[in-house]
Length: 62
Image: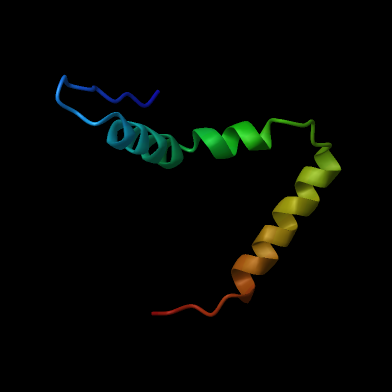
């Protein structure tokens, strides 16, 4: 769980921005969106296959 400590002289907006960034890095929001609705196993398989196709289609920079 991301945690941000706010000191007495700290700005709340900056602390909120840091907290949001930590949540994004931890993958909390994407996980929440992913579990918002039930996804049938066939839909999950189809989504993963499409993602793999997109990934393989991209040109690789070496």
